[in-house]
Amino acid sequence: MSDITPITVLIVDDHPLFRDGVAALLGKQDDIAVVGEASNGLEAVSLAQQLKPDVILMDLQMPGLNGTDATRQILSILPGSRVLMLTTYKGDVRANEALSAGAAGYALKDTVRKDLVNIIRDIYEGRKVVPPEVAIDLAAHLSDEKLTQREMDVLKFVALGKSNRAVANALGITEETVKSHMRNVLGKLSANDRTHAVLIAVRRGILTI
Image 1 (spheres, rainbow, N blue to C red):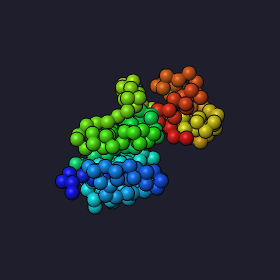
Image 2 (image 1 turned 90 degrees about the horizontal axis):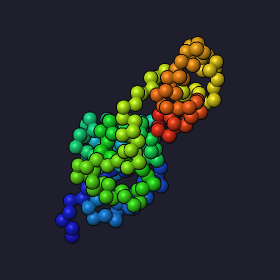
Image 3 (image 1 turned 120 degrees about the vertical axis):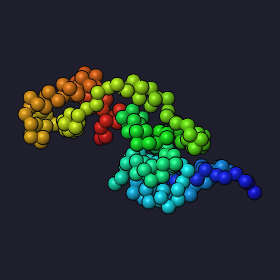
Image 4 (image 1 turned 90 degrees about the vertical axis):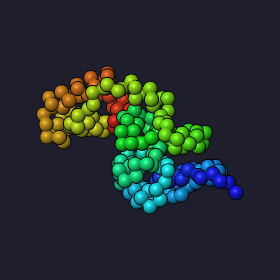
């Protein structure tokens, strides 16, 4: 009989096969115990309050309440819990939002099989965990000026292939104002043109398409 007190883990993901895979992986560890599973952010907040897990594995993108907002809510109630954001998004913007919400780590789902167990142990011990490629992007864009909400609105329409006139009509502004916003977007993202700006925004997690 082991006298190890296991690290209790709550798995949050809207894909049941992913939850099953993670639970099976963690079930092989003597020092980790899965105490619950949630399929969305709202369920995660409720279960976290009931179970008070040591570590929460949180999917970033979920319907309803996303992982970042769920993390913020959970940590306001259970500041002692450690949240590891699990995602397919490498973009620095998403990572920054998650870490700013209080997540102790940010891990990519394609590394789960190899690294997850050690990452859970690391964040339980109080260490921050961020993949090197994400950390490099975070550092590179640390001092970047953020897009304003209106610039984001314009970029979203541009990503849909809308012309300046169509964007102007949709937002109730002039074409010249649209052009001005796009000039600002190109400058802030160091983009060569509209298409390049959209590609950069998607890669960094500024836009989701």
